[in-house]
Image (tube, rainbow, N blue to C red; front, side):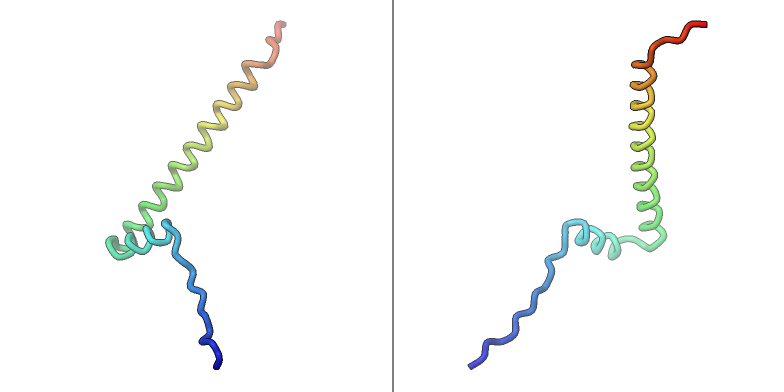
Length: 66
């Protein structure tokens, strides 16, 4: 007697589950707007981090006197 073949089904991640719920509750325009907004937030955070790093470098540089 042979065993039945086993099928491996991937368990969706939490993010995948949230996206599925989002797609059911929102129109595609709203989804796009939310994703664009989140992308903007991440880009703002990256720029802020870059500003802090640039300021740190400037603060460590020796003062140049003419």
